[in-house]
Length: 399
Image (cartoon, rainbow, N blue to C red; front, side):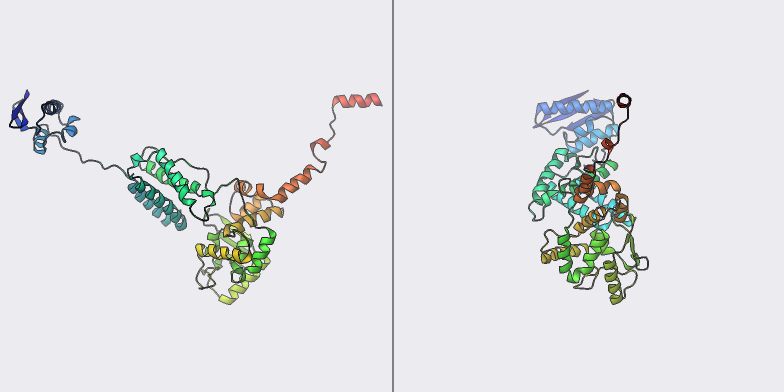
C-alpha cells in the first residue's frame, strides 16, 4: 500500500510495493494533485511496464521520482515521434522528382513549374503558421486556392487564373506521394478540372491576315516564325530541335516530343525547307547543334527567350496576344480546315484524336460550314423513299 504524507510544503509518497520500500517526493503542494499522482502511480506499478499511465506520469511527478518508479517495473521511455511536416513531404517529393529526372521520366522544365507551385503553397502555409501535415485539411487547401487566385490576378497576364487547375494537380500529386509513403492518411487536395482545358475559349489560332502581318514583320525571327507556323511543335520542342532531326533528303522533321514522348514526323513546307537549307549552309553546324539560335547572341534559343521574341514580333506586327502556342493552334486548325483527317493531324502533333477533337475541332468555322452545307443538300435519310405495305397497297389501288 502507498500513502501520502506532507513534509514541509510538499507531499511525499510512502509505502511498500512487495518487498520494495518507496519513499519519494511528488513535488506538489496540492492535496488533490498528490492524490491524482498517487492513484496513477499505483495503477502504473500494478500494470507494469506496458501501462499507459507512464507517459502521463512523465510530466506529473519530478524527474528523479519518475526515474526511480519506472525502474521498479523496467519501464523505458520510447523516443517521441516528431509529427510529419509539409517540409518533410516537400523534401521527399523533391528527391523523387530528381530520381525521375535522372531516369528520363520527368523533364527539368516540368519540375521547375512544380517547384513554383510548391513554393507558393509553402509561402501560404507560413502566412497561416501551419506546418504539420495533420493540420492540412481540405479546408486549408481550398483557402490556398482562393489565396492563389488572388495572387495570380494581380499579374497583367493572369488569363483569369486558369493556371489554378495546374497548381491543384501539382499539389494533388505531391500529397498522393505522401499517401504512398504513409506520411498522411488521405489526400486533402481536390482537383479543379484538367490542366490546360478551357472550354469557354478553346483554340486560339491566328487569322490569315494576322499570319500575313507576322510574316512581314518577322525579320530576324523568320526561322522561328516558320518553324512554329509549319510544324505545330510546342515552344519547348522548337527550341530543343537539333539538325540531326531535320532530314533534308526526305523533306521531313522527325523527333520525339518532350511532353508526351511521342515520335512525330512532319513533312516540311517548301518555304520552311528553303530557309532551313539556307541557315544550314550559312552556319555549317554539327548534327547535335540546335536549329534555332538567338539572333542577338548566336547561342541556343531558350523557351523564355522564344516567348519574349514572339511577343515582340506580335507588337511589331500589330497582332494582339501573339505567343508560341497559338502557332500550334493555328497549325492544327489549318490542317483540319484543309480536309486532313483528325487521325493524321493528331499523329503530326503527337496527341490523341480525342484531345484533338476536344481542343480544336469545335472551334473551326470551316467544319461547321461543311456540316451546314451537308444539312442543306437535300440528301440524307429523308431523301430515301420508304417502301412499306401501306404505300404499296395505295399504289396498287391507283393502278
